[in-house]
Length: 555
Image (cartoon, rainbow, N blue to C red; front, top):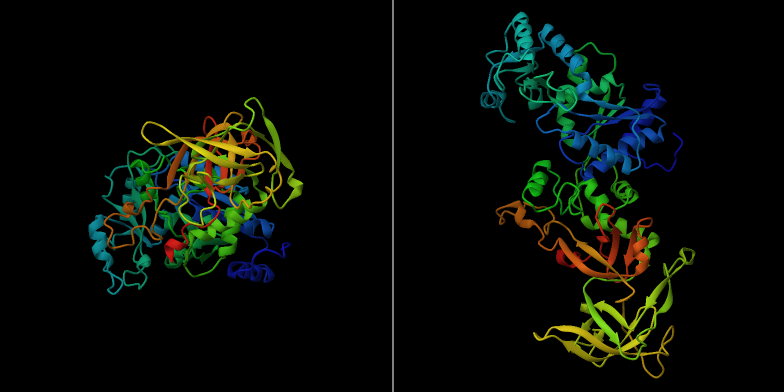
């Protein structure tokens, strides 16, 4: 292995030992998603692990779709998964589908039957559960367990030919109904699914293998050396090994389990995510509030931020719950160093400078980044009519800590002049619609003489600025573990009703119209924002706020 800076963990230690002992000459991994939804951020951990190990050890990593349940799978999900992996910066060596092996898988099922290690069972789903037993009580044998090999072979062929109804029969491995591991109590390995059109094989099959049967055989056929799974598959490993030990196949990959990435303030259940979509709570799988990789991409997260986040989380054997603030901190750190600064007024209030010439446009110069001169400067147009944020003005100063604009008070406009509010203009309903202000022409780039002005606010020219829609996104849920509060009847009651605030009258610096090539910026005093390339017009999505606004709520 050439990269001495690669993170050390127990999986890499196993691989190092295997290579040192010549157990393996090279490393082959795989990423095996089921194409029944979009990948969530937790999948980025597995992607980075599998592809990262292959890259670091000069090995191979396959992308293999576990497409054994056509009722929930589609080409849309296949394409979305491929796009996510490519966006994260990884390339697969071979693209495979579990359905590529359907003929071989069926052949191995026949082999198990011939060895009297599998049988056709007529118990229905409810009866099967009853016979399985519990964690404390052993199961009992199916009344169909002792069918002859000849009868089982005949029934299996009839199942393959579509001669039985869905749910009427299954093929089960014959292992041990008294095993302390429920997964070894004659698990189902094939079930009937008629009338479905598979996105790869069409209608040529009505008998589909189960994941636990498909996965180890697919690994072996592809020559996978280290099959990396999350911890929920640890109890399935005995069947993984049993199956490969009892069929005629050359390779026997090693399954190794690691902890999942459980992120607070999110859910990752595909069923629940689909419920959010179908219920209109979000706009789709790639809604920027969704915990999907596609959602993170649309919101403006970078591939490097997701990979760095999981790198810091580490690879362990212990499931843990990671604070959302940790993910947000990573993207803030990156944006602090790379995002150019701009001004944007999200909730505009008009300011007219009565002392500034009506036909004058002054071009001011400001740094693109306060701590990195190499990033250069940009030009900002300054005019008589400006926009400031409505929250930066109050008619009456509420307390000594308010350092923005008030009636009769002064404030500095960022990178320009000190202004004073002389008059407040209201409409017939008493709403403030305009501020009439004066400016001190001697304060451009220097402090006023004889007085201190502490407040600084941002602004945009009302006539030379550009218009934009700004989506202010926040966490989708207001609870660290949605649905865990017993006092809340429905997990959807934990949805944050302010997870999206649309500012469709925003004003931005005109230089932000060039944000396609450099799409991420810090809007001064507002947060980090991303120009959404998939939306018509000028649309910016908030990636993250400047500070963790949730910290105090959780204290």
